[in-house]
Length: 316
Image 1 (tube, rainbow, N blue to C red):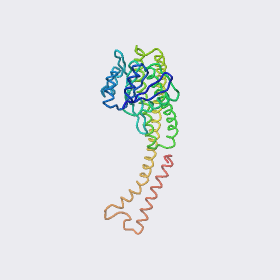
Image 2: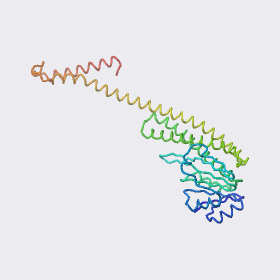
Image 3: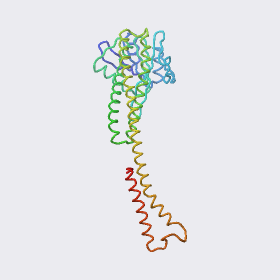
Image 4: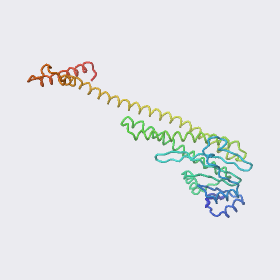
């Protein structure tokens, strides 16, 4: 089943499932958005027959080369942008193919992306209108860029919170949080750089209108600002990680000092006990009635003397 949307001139969005209705609206040059998510063979054959759309190989989606992510044909163009998919324990960039031809926008993706659902609700609620499919595409990208900015703000607030928290405790949860936000920031930075490269290509395209190009320029400015924030947060995360590592090292040194101190205190008694534990026939006070008390006195006195010396040297 095709998931197509008609954008009427008066604004809003209407879902269409009948292929015949899609063909009719396309012939009337009405603005259509066909959103493919894990499409069936039947749907792909219909789109290839009617609009010349072909599903690209999987390696095209994974390729980082600009030549694979942007291409202009005689009467169409396609671009592959990554959209951030964020879970509690996982962050990754999901590639989305945008195919533009005349009055048609086709998007192809293989997982659920929140930005798409938000964009459809936004069109319906505000009765938004669009002049062309490239304008529709850029507005969708603009929403994704806004969400990227919101994520960066969350990263900044969370880093400040973690910085204050590490001086109270150094738990494994804090380390996991730092690693998560570091990965999120890195993924955002990669997505920003990729969008900048492809949008710069779109600015030179003859298949993109002047109004849309002005919007692209504004998005590029926003992306440059987000890239600066991402760099700042990357440095802050490194700083927090170094502080956390330093605090953990101090705690480990303190624990090692305690164990070293305890071991040092037990050395003199152990020495005395070892001497009187030797298997010789004659040892001073070995068979004396007061031998046990004498050895105990030696242990206590030597240990006390060691403690007094350490205190005099201000070791303890």
